[in-house]
Length: 188
Ligand SMILES: NC(=O)c1ccc[n+]([C@@H]2O[C@H](COP(=O)([O-])OP(=O)(O)OC[C@H]3O[C@@H](n4cnc5c(N)ncnc54)[C@H](OP(=O)(O)O)[C@@H]3O)[C@@H](O)[C@H]2O)c1
Image (tube, rainbow, N blue to C red):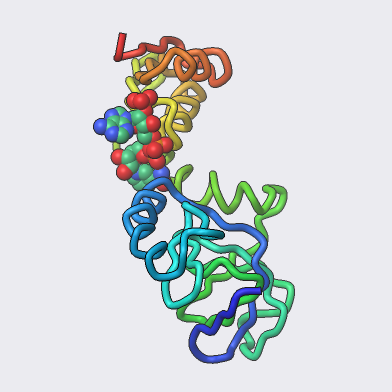
């Protein structure tokens, strides 16, 4: 178990999931050199950031409250925060957020697809672009996290969907598996 101590003892969280976004992986890799120099490269996950002797998840951590001294956080509640990757962590209401009851969505999906990527795709497409059935929607980075969902939502809304991606494999995936009408490999 890694040492962990964050702030006032109000809640102890048992970690179950760690979500690492690509943006955060990039930030992590920039810090990896300094981390390896200080603590040694062995055992340090390339997707993690290591400082103060701890591996910081560099992403959102999801866990179950095992001990609570705060009335708003019941033991057994599922919570998330930007935390360290450790078996247990101590948090406060300022740092830890209840995830609520996501059923019937599995926690791992509530924590990934429905957490940031999905809302980005959903509101970006529907609230900003406001596509109408029959219109053509062109999606760049179509095989990426956001683009792949944008294309599927656009199909549900009755649009013709064209996706741009950088490899034949990605093009095949968005067309065959995700249902894009057209996939263009912009590198060829
Ligand atoms: N993920 C989120 O939750 C989130 C939230 C808010 C905003 N965004 C924004 O939404 C956009 C897509 O994010 P994402 O998470 O879906 O990205 P992603 O899954 O990392 O996909 C990125 C893809 O973009 C394509 N790409 C095209 N030009 C690129 C370039 N110059 N450098 C790097 N990649 C390039 C690459 O695919 P090809 O080789 O197939 O072109 C790459 O795989 C980004 O602008 C991001 O900042 C994302």
